[in-house]
Image (cartoon, rainbow, N blue to C red):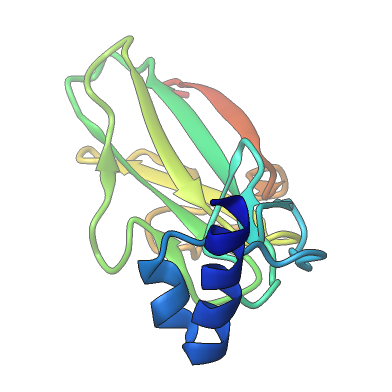
Length: 162
């Protein structure tokens, strides 16, 4: 029986891949070349923990970075905030949308997928006009509000009224 099943798989391969699959044969590709932060499992590439993406071309997986901010300004205003790529024309969230802190003393936590070797800059603004980091339009000067894209949680700390 084993020889017959094996012969059926070989015959199925000769007849075409569809026939081989129909016969229940499983074939694995060996030595799959996966990109950075990806690994091979039975001929397919998968992202390592903390990374995301589709790696069919061996380009690798991108880091997943979580960013945490806390509204610590008791002025009654919500804080709208964005993240900007310092390397390309990209924002999180996209377009004119902004993340909004959930209230005084509560953490706002958002997860993004960024590119390896990319720098991510933080900008925020309140309804009352307080500006943090590079601002909501990425136009404010800031020496310490850009961070390397890495698979990690980045805690930006407390946004105070000062």
